[in-house]
Length: 116
Image (tube, rainbow, N blue to C red; front, side, top):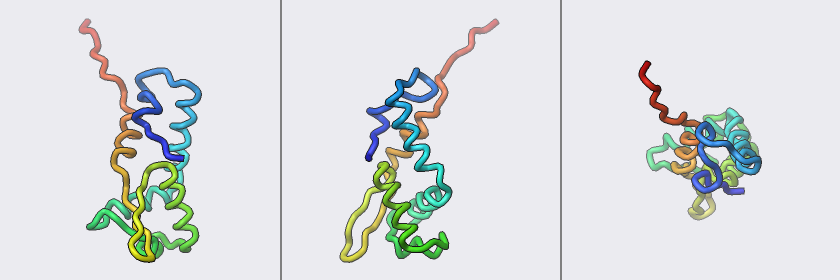
């Protein structure tokens, strides 16, 4: 379930969200609501090449390979990661546009207060 925030949802704090838009945004926040997934995004983004395979992520997280693979799949399905097969390994890379869009969805509108 890949979601493109730039086309699905207006900024959360600027416009009234329709039910479908709120649901799409809530799905993305639920994906990020898991501490291990936030750690995975951080670990992958911090790699010198910007990409990592499951084998590089297991030890730092202290989780089993199937658990790490599950979290990577959830992040990929939500559009937070891309993946590329290199031989027998799959390397994951963070999608900066998705993170920027979700950050942008929380920006308050620029309202200039009227001078008294």
